[in-house]
Image 1: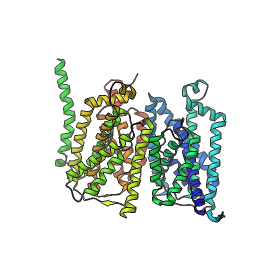
Image 2: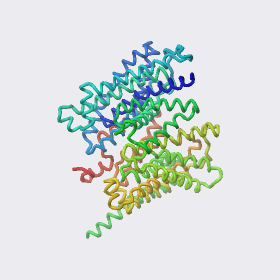
Image 3: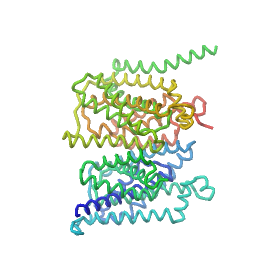
Image 4: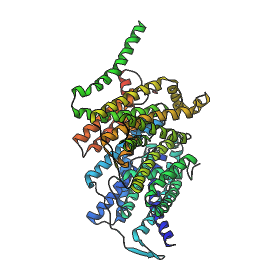
Length: 288
Length: 313
């Protein structure tokens, strides 16, 4: 019983972070049409910014959560407005635009990772925050391991309602369905796609802050998280925000179950599920 | 008159192909050891990009499985390296990659577009993690040592693989296979309806392209002398050929070669001159090129020759 509880809590912890990561990635690919390979680098930036603010200025990581996310939102918005918009407008076909955006995001990956290595060095870092034990249902958890999923779920739900219920969200969804029709209805497409990319960076920043209080971080950690975002987005269905939310938890729970039985096999299980899914039902859980 | 012009143009083209090959073949005679080593690593990129574009160029299927094929070639060399002669190892590396490609190709028949990209990425990562786990839990090791060969031998092998790859790419693009692949790239359903065996064509070409990657991996393992899964299945090996091919420009045989040549050379220079900033500079150059040269070098060359790039209206 106690082991089961441990497995579930572990699964919810990783799963909730995966959800936040994947929802941002999903919006960037589904609407802004950028397969952002540098998504993991934004997570890494969020994590290291949180780490620096905590170790140098003693700022509470939960406060930096509110700082890092919006800063990355602004950076993401301007990146898209300057670079990716130019690529999209000058391309002759949507597939050319997607290919060139992919390449540009590779460029970003190299630049951000190199800058991080120059600033923070190649070391693995960790943060001591809220690691006091909490006794719960006969077993003990670090407080951060219970707090992180709660925050992640709140962030994910807020994000979901933003896209599903607000006016900007409606404009985002209309741009995703039919760019031309959305433009004719008075949606400023360039700004809207840039906002989507920025929101993806915002989610990456949130995820980075959450990662930094629960796991160790390093400047080269980005690609692994990008790969996870890939898997979760396919699991949930390309372009489905709610699918990414659910997919994150499914993958997190599977990971914690497999890791319980054989610690080295977690990632292998992820990839096997990923590939089986692509062969059997490539449209994912929430796909049409 | 016309025929004479045609002939002179053809001989010019042949000269353009053979002159660099002759220069490369005689390189060790007049240049330093350092340049031979440098040209070797650039040629590895050229082989990877060229063989990647044999399949992905005409069909438009972007494969990220290059790391899987290259890495499998490397591990073949590491496992067989002590018992077999080098030629056999290189061919074995190619053939094992080829078989892997047939298997992967048969599984991914239904997948198109983004799903194919993701599947091939998943494939190379899955193999990497399985080998990592196997090394740690079954063999109790992290990596392997490979019997090293001197740099000149490696250079000759790489050059032969490059020439064979170039010839194959040319023959494929000129054959019915190449025509079938281009029709798949243009419209797969239409191709299937006009009687092209879509599946067979795709799997065959995917396997051909994997062969050269595996062979290059096998010979490079003897150069690097130590390999572990993170080196052999480095995701960058999957991404670089895509980058280089698009940088050079698709649609023409020389595009990927030029792209890989320039970016490979650039990487070498940046790594040796600015070891701490090379990724930064590489990234900046990449973005600048995409912004100002979105059609790659093929587009630029076609512009110079006063022709509109392919697909322009």
